[in-house]
Image (cartoon, rainbow, N blue to C red; front, side):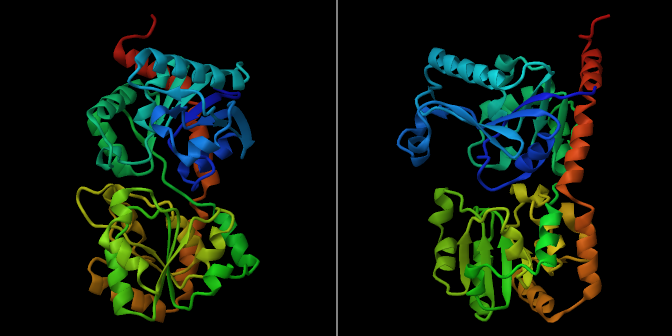
Length: 400
């Protein structure tokens, strides 16, 4: 298949929030295809929130990063318990999305979470793509209804893919589907550009003394803040710098580990930063870290962290918990488990200067860019008619 596709991408992430693999991929695909990106309409449960109060009276679409970003009306609210009304709202949203697109090319429903499976019937797309970016069943809020929706989605999608081979294997175990893997990557050129320009330290980072042990990513319950607090207490001369949005979940902010970190003068929460300035923070850390809880039940066991190749591009030493998906990089990552392991690993990383390791890290990053990942995904999209035909034949539904 050649030519432009029309894509309705549905994801629970705000386009203007922390950029993750959805925005990275779709912003690049938007150069070749027509894309509408939406989180779906507001819900009756959003009443009283600041986000709904800021929403426009009339819905609109903003053109950003090669994509039409849906900004729904604050007066058109879903009400799931009122099924007839809820159905009317869903139909109205689908009509809005389709009207925004030219209406001349094949329509693709690009679904990023099972909560959006119900839109497929209303969209009546030519093709369905399921981008499963996490092991949802191990996250809070997973229900039997979502489990059933995911199984239907796996049976309906023409392409299923995830960011790790282990997660793809989980999906294939759940349903008969050929799940592919599209590993996370990085905007490598942005980091290299910051290095070549000798980008100065951002003011809030410049006020923090070295050595700095950095973490860039969401501040969520699977981040091991207890480990951070223990290390910071043991080594008061080290400064831990955490950059990223804090997830608004009660068990994070009410946890004793979080409060303990907040009470330590050498643990610094700098908040969310725009993606354009994150490289300036990365290159001015002394060690970059991936400090996750180690639990068989955690989704992090299958993780291929978004920050990995950004860390590599900076060239700085990396200390991480042992994650199966990144063990291939053990020559340039130090893995640590216990608090003692972490203390020794960070100490060694701060004391060691190895130019060859820096070169290797940056070479790895150069081979893992979002441009390359988006090009691969684009090539998969060109296979959609063939994949649909194969799936129908396998199910016995193909026309003779």
